Image (tube, rainbow, N blue to C red):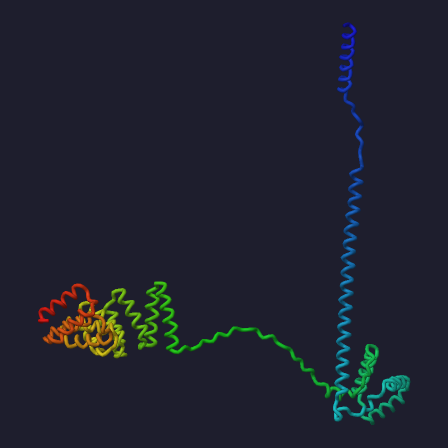
Length: 389
């Protein structure tokens, strides 16, 4: 055990020594490093180089663009000059025989003109005066010489730029012969929408409004339908359909007097309008005004309308106008002979007039039709017994 204790003590001592050594702080001398400065200088140099390269590229591209633009401008100018020259040449060659004159003295060949210019330049003053006098005698003016010089220069340029043979014509002749070119330019015309109003006839206008009014009635828009019918009557007061439709709408709204007035106006315009008379008579009859209904229907007592004759017969019987009632029932029997109530109606009217024999025959006919109600059948049989069948 002592050996173990000794080893433990040695171990503790070593650990204590190591801890002491670790607690000792070592102060190293501070070194002044220049690494950051070097890196900063290198980065600056790189940035400067990049900016310089970028600027040089921009400058090079700018110069190239300028050169390209200049080259295109020169090409365009040369093309325009060539086209103008060809146009002048063609114009000169197209001169009529009266316009193409012989070349004047000033329009000499190019070689001769150049030689004369050199000779004039080398001549002394006296000779030059002689030449001038000779030129004056030949009516050569200074303006013509300038024109000749311009013509020579133009000919040189044409010879350098084009191999086309050029016919040199007098300047004055070319000026009078060359006419301004007519430029035909197509101007785009803006498309425009033209709205034309078509004038409809009253009949067409009324037909359109009738359709609109019927559609409004289907939508139960009564106010709209009334307005459309009124507009039709303003345009065409004699329009029977619009008047009847409007009267029916007013009758449905219980505007009886307004409906009757409207129908009366239509009857005044068309006295033979049976349907308007029938509508007006029904309104009167339902209001207990049998006499007004009779007065409305009596002018059309010869009508073949079952409805008119039925209402006229009923109104006449109610007013004790049995003659009129007999006439109406006979018309109904002629239209529908198998209907028993027509026979019963005429039998009652004949009975009221004291015409018992024809009344008894009419009662028998009504019973024979066998289409009366039970009460009507009993009444007919009872009258036959009373009349002594």
